[in-house]
Structure formats: C-alpha cells, structure tokens
Image 1 (cartoon, rainbow, N blue to C red):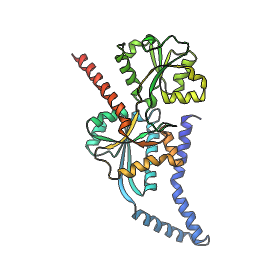
Image 2: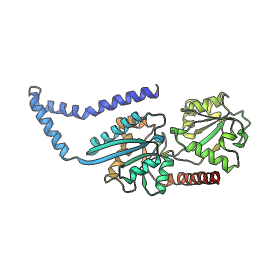
Image 3: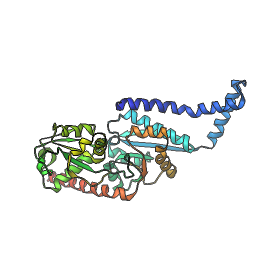
Image 4: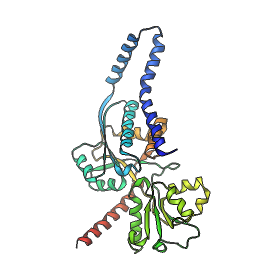
Length: 336
C-alpha cells in the first residue's frame, strides 16, 4: 500500500466520520418516535436538539500554523485537510464551536509576524524553528510526537556501514558515498552531521564525502548499504530498528557514529496560551485512543503525543543553540 492510497482511504474515512453524529441522532430519533411519524416532526426534533446542543458549545478561534518542515513528503492540501478535520474532531468531542483556519508557511519570519499580529493559536513547527521562536520568548511547547513502541519522543541519528566495511569512524568515510534519510524531511539530520564533522575537525559535508544523496524513505537509505550500493547511510535510529524488525539481516550493519537523542518537531502555542489550552492538550493527547484519531495521526506519521517535558527538550535546545552559534560564526567569517 502506497502512502497516497493510505491518505485517500484516510480522507474517505474522515469525510464519512463527519456525518456519523448526525446519522446517529436521526437513527435514535426514528426509534424513539416510531417509523410511522412524519418527516416533519423528525426535522423539528432534530432542529431543536441541534439548537439546544449549540447553545451549550464554547465558541473559540483555532488558527493553526503548520510549517512546511512538519510535512515530510505530505502535500500541503492533505495537511490542511487533516488539520481541519482534527479541529472539527475537537469541536465534536470536547464541546466547542470552533472557527478554525489552517495556514502553511515556509518562513520563520512569516510565523513571527503572525504571532505579533495575534493570528496563531497552535503551531506545528520543525524543531529548529521552534527553538528560534522560543529564544525570542514568542512560543511555549504544548505536546511532542511519540515514536511507535516508545514513550520517548526523541530518536538518535546514526551512521551505518556494511559489516565488511573498513570504516570505523566518520574520518574513515572520506570520499565515500553517503545516503541521507532526514526523518520527516527535517533539518536535524544534516545539522547533526555538520556539527559532528566540525567537532572532529573534518571537512564540511560536501567536501568530506564524494557525494551525498537524500532519499525519502528509510529503506532507500539502509538497503543500498546492505547490498553494497552505497558506502554509508545516515538515518534515525528508530526507523533503522523498525527495518531490522522486518528484516533481521539488516541488524548486521554497523553503527560508526551516533547522535544524542534529538527531537524533529514540536507542537506549540503562543507564549500567551490559548484560553482553552488544557482542553487542547487533552484533545491532542487522546487522539491515539480512537480509530479516527489514529487515522489522523497516520497522516503525520505520528504514534501519538505526550506532554512537552523539559527533560525531552533540553538536549535538543542545547544542540540547536550550538548549531546556530556555528552558523553565525561562519557568516561573520564570510563577511569579514
């Protein structure tokens, strides 16, 4: 099954799901009133029930900003549809009348402007963008995406080689061919390798390796190394472990470099949080407890969410602080 097929079925299921509350209401009313009663009376009762329910709903705005770095290979339109459905889900399940909007963006500067104009309520950001805005005291963490089979949202990045390779370190991979799988197309993989080469006093990536090829799937990174079609692979350890569970032979590949556990994305709110922040957190965390919620999570390749705790943010925060300092230093040297 391809990702596009999965998304199509998810979209169909989501569209069908939106009608379930109304269908359930009509079935219940038909049973109560009897099949012989007129459609007019059913319509009147339905209108009265809807009016009563609407009167008890909490009206709120929910403007969701989603970074292109959060999408991976997912299209903007599919992401907008998924987030819009999520907002509808919150309304139905948690008693809100939500005026929602979804706005994708590829610019941190644009996100800052929307925050300054009070146009954002929830932000789905790539981790580097989140920490840049956090340093400006503009956002606060809300939840973190979990990885399947674990309660830790972080994963390490690793460089693996064939078991027969003579390479035992990054230095040994000079003028080798590197395959690169950046999880969710985030910048974490490249940033870590950049820092690792600097820390080991090695040349920059484009000079150290004979070639670097990005791929969109972890198997397209790992399998060529196993079959000696590539010299080394940079992949997140969680994806590598999942591939090893499907094919035990892949576990023979050797890890010659490993990062600290790092995050790839953060869901956040403006520093002045949404008035119903606690309800939003509850709604997001409980997504994985329903079939419909799991379908939405699948679109974003997430296994669920956990509260954003500092113990999970701390290592990534320090890493990105060092990385930005390195880039700033390079910029000053280049301008000198």
